[in-house]
Image 1 (cartoon, protein in one colour):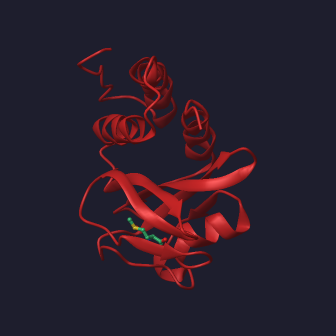
Image 2 (spheres, rainbow, N blue to C red; image 1 turned 135 degrees about the vertical axis):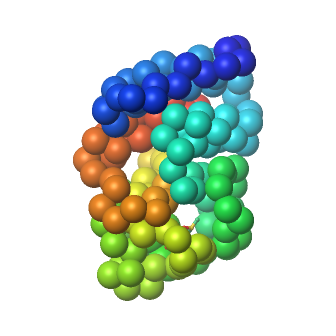
Image 3 (cartoon, rainbow, N blue to C red; image 1 turned 60 degrees about the horizontal axis):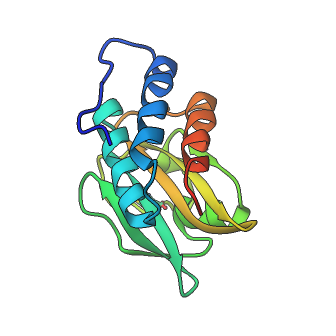
Length: 158
Ligand code: SME
């Protein structure tokens, strides 16, 4: 397993994803512990993109429960249909929110967060959790993030 990531500083968002994805693949190679892998994905993405918050919520007893993440402390439990995370789970689709203040029911874990992307993670055709990324900038996420973050989720053996 690689111990140091190679981080692109001056590059487009797409170039950064193209550089980090094989490194994440190598990090996950040979490890099947979900929490360990989610922890390393969060750390690798934080290091490459320096987003405000990046991490996972996993479904337990019909609620989303905070999993591995990088960034400030966050809400620990989110109900189905609540906030961006709970809505992504309920609707079973990726949600890109350019301005969280305009999203009805957005859960503000930190007032600095301005835009957000949430992707459902599937296991056996059912949502088992979400990947949540928050930015302190408005309109920070788009289809490029959706495409590559989805590729990263698919690297998980769930
Ligand atoms: N803003 C999210 C809650 C999770 S935190 O941002 C880490 C939401 O509305 O679901």
